[in-house]
Image 1 (tube, helix red, strand yellow):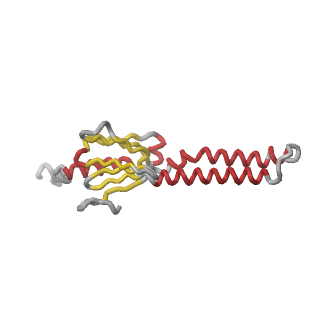
Image 2 (cartoon, helix red, strand yellow):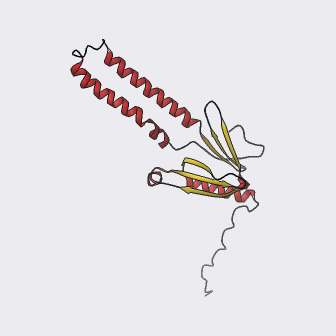
Image 3 (spheres, one colour):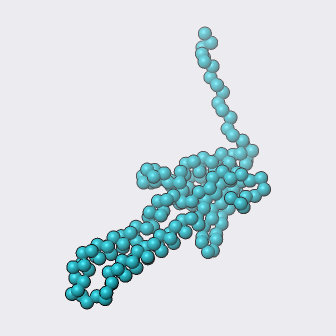
Length: 181
């Protein structure tokens, strides 16, 4: 990440989970399957009786494939353009392809960080992280974040370090024989 502040260290940088891609491309996949089924059943059997132009089946199939590919490219670009960055000084959420939007939350202003994971999210390793910062108009939501528990833990660790708490001290070691015998 080239736009780090002086003395700032990158902790985590991620895009939304890949499940966002799958959720967005089911419609073009269904369209392609339906056109292929129609092409090899209905249109093949009734091609001459419907007086369709030559190569209509070919153009229909290629047109739907081209639209599905275009849809996937748009979804991929939108997915790639959303970035969640955690440094030792701030949380940065960047979205947008042509018009860019950046939301920056100073790490020492974070008051609470909550994670939510659905059953599917727990199985696939993604969830929702809500970052509540002092002075903000509500929590900032990071949807479909991969490994949200690790992100939350890093936010708390960095927040504690920025506030001067450092890393928590290890509990004192127990003697091997507490009775002293």
